[in-house]
Length: 374
Ligand SMILES: NC(=O)c1ccc[n+]([C@@H]2O[C@H](COP(=O)([O-])OP(=O)(O)OC[C@H]3O[C@@H](n4cnc5c(N)ncnc54)[C@H](O)[C@@H]3O)[C@@H](O)[C@H]2O)c1
Image 1 (cartoon, protein in one colour):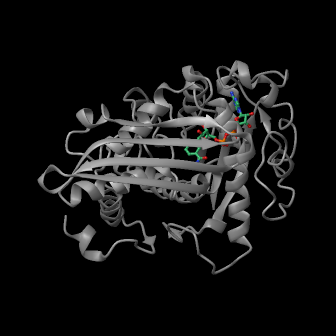
Image 2 (cartoon, helix red, strand yellow):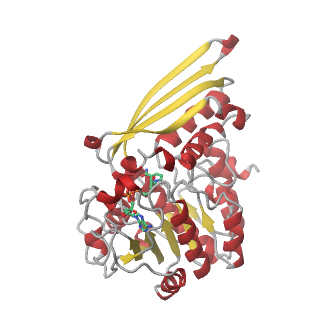
Image 3 (spheres, protein in one colour):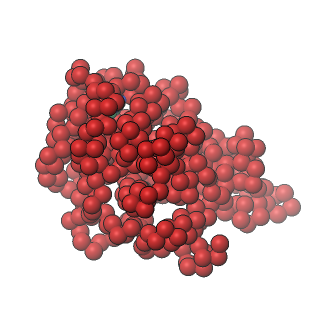
């Protein structure tokens, strides 16, 4: 069993919990999963046992109801049985932006101390705590990361605030014998994964990316929250560097790459539309232009990766891996501590390291010779 705690019972949490229930009810069906089995764990072995939020609409309610409380908008994919997990009040800090007060509607319940939450993670036997706070929650992310470290619990940082890739935190986790994976989930077939694939293709075929942008629009609270430009610094760095690191000189490439949230279009709901433009120079310096439009369910993209990452975190923790193992984050996150030039490189490194640790991962998405060559 992989016992998971969630910070931020929003739309990603709703898709994640419903997705786990979907696969639990479909034994043998593994369509849409990146890996069916990691370290002996299947998706149906994931159980959410603890949840924190600050919204009046969610705190105090059973998770099975809170996941559908406003402003969440992921539709009901499966009937969720009552979980017995009552959403607990957290610490607001900078989680709720001024322009989001009406949507998130913070509760005036007493806000707990760090030690209190750390103790609860222990008493609920949480293995992995996932951070799903709104973009720009720098202080709140630091707070919950410290809660996890204090409790010796693995921390999965799904958002673009830097924890796994900031040298201060891994030391904290290492001291407590725990690990942190992050930062900023890279969706299954989201705009970053596709943009990176295009940019690495250009390089692999002997071209050079001259300039590129990625414009994203969506209609959920994630996009509405990102209307406040002051909350976006690390989001831009995370998305831009995810593409720039596919290039031979990432820092120089970053000057000619723009990638970030670009607009809130309410009627889109959880549908995210991305426009990716790549101008490359090819044979004899002649130009090549790629224009691509990508349409995805934003939350399914994140949940598909999270079901892998929580099982990976549990398997690594069982083998005593602690701190911030960069190789474990490169395939799954946009801003990992050790970026890879391509997803193929990241995945082959991951397979090689898991083999060394004796952790199984199936099915392998690359032919044997690729990860065995190193
Ligand atoms: N494809 C994706 O969806 C994707 C990819 C990468 C990263 N992310 C990131 O994941 C995060 C979650 O996304 P989402 O769509 O679920 O967001 P959301 O807006 O639906 O949910 C955020 C939740 O956090 C709660 N919250 C706010 N402040 C809090 C605090 N201090 N303590 C506890 N809870 C608090 C809110 O009440 C809300 O329930 C965002 O930062 C998003 O950018 C999402």
